Image 1 (spheres, rainbow, N blue to C red):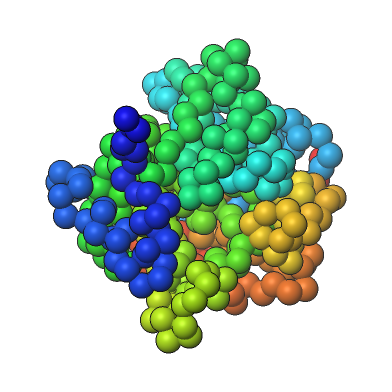
Image 2 (image 1 turned 180 degrees about the vertical axis):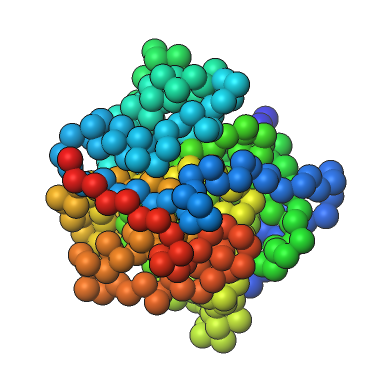
Length: 354
């Protein structure tokens, strides 16, 4: 007898939804989750100068020297790990492709080492790839052998399952509009401290993947896929859907709002953007975009909105098809939610070359 798949969503359910059914929404609606938890609040941004959030950009060719210099300029890791607080590192693992499509494991392990030097009592690496529907999520997580390497170094590595409902909790917060309740992975919701480690790359729906967009990997699959479908319509979707059906599901405003609100449900304390190389002109994978080498930067901040704005200007510099105006809709929502400022004149920017 075939064992029943205990995941909350099947690929068949997704296809049914994609041609006009509400199958996915019905599976994660009333009755699947008991009660709603308060949203994760996190630690207030410790990286400020007076009232201004600090953004640090370091340019160089030695990654360890660059990261150490950036952290020193920012204020160090000690404010995050006082009293030995445990830290969860949230990278970007998507397809079976190397950096800059996915976060460089060497930088993850370097960050873990620096956290230990600062006094953390433990480090865990977590992500939940959105490739469940393609059946490749395990290939994605095993690509860089990060689980085995983490075990050798005493670092827990957890690969969440975007389709497994029991791994997630429902959270609620006044002011969320796209989804009044956002379903977040337990590892994220319970983490004392989160360090966000995205790559900088183009994306077909959000236009840019950076600090804010990287939080999709913390959210239950049904919600992230639903938001993508609404944002994309069916322009690249299921064969046979007519234009009227496609238009009925195309809602970029919903997607942009959801993107910011997903980030609000996570609220990492620090974001480290590895922009030594970036993906331009298309994404989020190699083949859809073009890798641009030689950028050679790390950009750090406790303010995700300022960080995305700063990194957006870097993308503009190297990608003539990209403009910051593309991401202003979700930057505005994130700013409204108190995730930071998109006005770089209200930040303290420190730029170093080493």
